[in-house]
Amino acid sequence: MIPKDHPRYHSLMVRERLARCAEGGILSLEGLTAHGRGEAFDYLMGERTLESAYLAEKIAAALLRCAERPVISVNGNTAALAAGQIRDLQEACGAAVEVNLFHHTGERHQRITTYLRKNGVKILEGTAERLLPLSHSRALCLREGIGSADVILVPLEDGDRCGALAGMGKTVIAIDLNPLSRTARSATLTIVDELTRALPVITRFCRDLDPDQARSLSGGFDNRVFLAGALQEIRRRLEHALD
Ligand code: PTJ
View (spheres, helix red, strand yellow):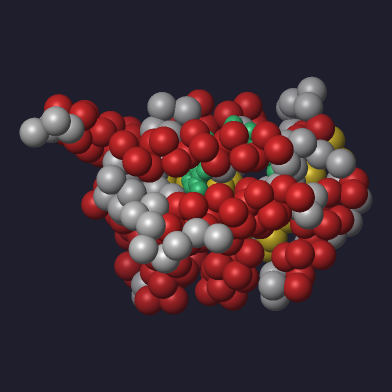
């Protein structure tokens, strides 16, 4: 039992939730370590949404709104942390949601699908085909989903798959707290923010942006600006850590 007045209450509660989801076969054990890496970067950035990330979230909403075939790719970590927020974003932008796992087993895929459905997410299902140029099982996806998406949101993504999707000409929006990761550097747009802080902001912008604003925001941006924004903040905080 974690006392409410513990200074790290929120973070400890999230860990507890993830541990339960790992026991329930939703989160992979590797997902727990991936979460720890994310926490470390979040700590370095002050556990808040940076201005640069907020702008990236607004642009992400514009890209999703302007897309013809938007898809949200959901893995175990995303389902465990943010099932309800994925439902809200899906409602706001009309994207298809496809479950796509790094540590794939048919049983885990089914558990995650059921869990997301219980939380109101509409899941695309069908026969997965090897459509991505990867030797890994992550190459498997649905032709009518990720296979034909023009804009794809990939929270907590693996670098190889992100690079493969971008290489296929898709607009790839990553959410990744590590601004140095291969995912962060190969995505079209990287949101360097914590998943559960980022998703409600994207959802709100999906609801609020008018079509002209969405078109002009999605027009042209340099992803390095968003990575540099996060790195600058880490540098600044480290320089003043002992002040
Ligand atoms: O459920 P599966 O089998 O598909 O596996 C999912 C994981 C996340 C385990 C898998 O895709 C993986 O190994 O990912 P990576 O390569 O470790 O990348 C995950 C990235 O997400 C890392 O750069 C972390 O810093 C980052 N991250 C972790 N938690 C969060 C996060 N970014 C935003 N919000 C978080 N809560």
